[in-house]
Length: 249
Length: 249
DNA sequence: GGAATTAGTGTAAAATTTACACTTTGCTAT
DNA sequence: ATAGCAAAGTGTAAATTTTACACTAATTCC
Image (cartoon, rainbow over all chains, first blue to last red; front, side, top):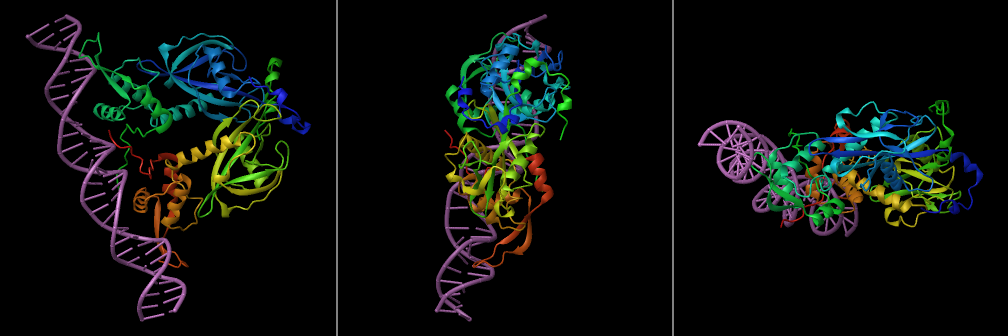
């Protein structure tokens, strides 16, 4: 990494007192598995809160960037690598960590469960997917962190396309709708959903049909990668799939 | 504040290595002054970057919450107190601070310049408002922090009402429009702006007229505090004041 | 070949968005 | 008093988007 210590020509000693804190990263990994939204938790194998289920997080090294730390920690604790992590915000209540002053930077991601193998090491005894409805009673301030990240996810879903990494390369519109429903935690109207999502123009009709289902097979679509990327990174949109309107006076 | 040290029953010594970092808060205070959007900068009176203009930021104490630190630092450096600060995100590149590993949590606010007196102390030699177009070449990674916060501000303006703390208690629609234009950095259509902003229903027509202007006086409005608060904190909206639409195929 | 199951489709009414230009009001200067 | 100035205030039609809503089509299975 960077050379930090060589980068410290003069630290006047009055500042020494400030250099007694630590920071961690915590990852909220949402997983989708053709139906439900889950979160990846670890069973801690180390103090504090040994043997409790918690968000996969750990200390950041001195010479390590935050984003890199989030990736490393996630990989070490759970085996999940190469995910796109977005920073949400930092939680730093005094007393949130029993060992001293520790603030934590929260990151989230949304991945397809079946694309990753859980492979535990480091301070994790175990790692597993938990239904988002069961996330409560976590140690530290992890409940609060989880909520903040879930809200951010919901917000982002309305501004950017989702699904690229979550669905198979070929998928049906119903599958995509289920994904949105899982994230937004509400049912959507089939016809309106299709109309809107198709009008965003990031789906390509493959002219192929689903196979092996005991009913009328659905058409298969794929994402248009270029258009998806543009919407994701640059343009954004308002995807107000749910009837938002408040009535008039 | 909280009792942190008493809260440290056992910190196994292997962890000591992690407790050698520091964190700071940096505040991006946008100011509005009936016309332009500015940012509050300080001229640093202390290493590193002594004598340079920078964002008002400083170290967080061991026993101080982050939000409290942001308030305290801002008040100490600039005299600006009692502002609502929103956390944006944390910047932690290795090497961003010459004294060692220091990550910084960025906060922003938007205030009315004439409501506050600048009153410098602590490590600031000077503090003053600078046009947002002149913000460049700041020390540390402050340019990047500024950009991130400005983007956040622009995003928030479209989701929440603005102006309560920025305009006089009685103001005209044109004043409010200028505020939006300053933040969004684009001109808006007068008629459409009025239609939209009035339909949000958080303005109250005072049936009074502006005085002392050399032209037709405008009607005065005030905010409906309850409705404003609800929109701000709970409901939110899409205020797409600018013709966003992309044309169709 | 009938039952079951999910896919797929259209429309009319309501609401919102957009683009656009002239009239009104009060003050000021003559 | 009045002419001119400067900004305030106002309306509409066309286009687009949103909403609510229910039946037919395609395939498998028995």
